[in-house]
Length: 356
Image (cartoon, rainbow, N blue to C red; front, side, top):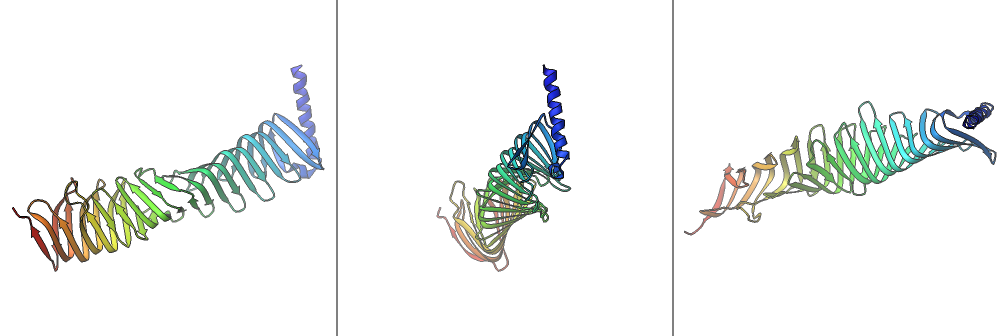
């Protein structure tokens, strides 16, 4: 009995394929495999129902699925369960896919995973829903979006992602966040984050916050160059740490491995220091330009230049001191205490001493 059923299915499939051969329009896809093939003519349109281990080509695009319906006249393909689509450098996986041949658009729904492997790129995207516009070579992803860039060592997530594959450019919106896997302590959040792959550049705009070790930097705009390990903050940037808070018109931050190595502040610079253990940050320095040198995420040196004004609350004999000069150098100990204060060029100031 099983043998007869098997022979009947074989004859049925061969007969269906013969029908395709009679009409060139019906040869728009190349069937590689299907456990069951049913061809129906509904409203003068042939509809192919493919069931089980489905594998076919439609043009240059390769499809796999558990089930597929192909509408010959409308040139629409609907696929369900374990859907895999291979298109040039892209692999697209989902529970459900609709492919519109006339407009070259694919809509992917549920458990979406898209992998791009190019000559100089390797990226993986995941989302609840995605659209791929083949003619424009643009990918859209929404809802629970996450991505991994294996070449740039970047991971991230957001609510919406748009990626222009040809231009190697993408942007994230709706609570975007990215982290650097080699710098697992460095992350960026903002209202919008853009990635320029050709220039190895990242920009973040509006309510930008970055975190690295115990340091937080906020601004309206961030420009990050991954090749140089350099970040530029503009739009009222602010830096916060346990030992000091800094403000200026622009920050330029340089990274080494996992940590900040150097921070340069430009124009209207002001830094608040904690000079006594467990005290508030009431000591301060203002200048036109400041430079911080870090070691293991701790500030070790601070240099200030041009129009330097300082106020320090000290321990022991000196309770307060105020000074002005062209240059100021600070050396900070491992326990976040100022060891050395050095004023250079045109130094002057007022010192007050404690009464014994």
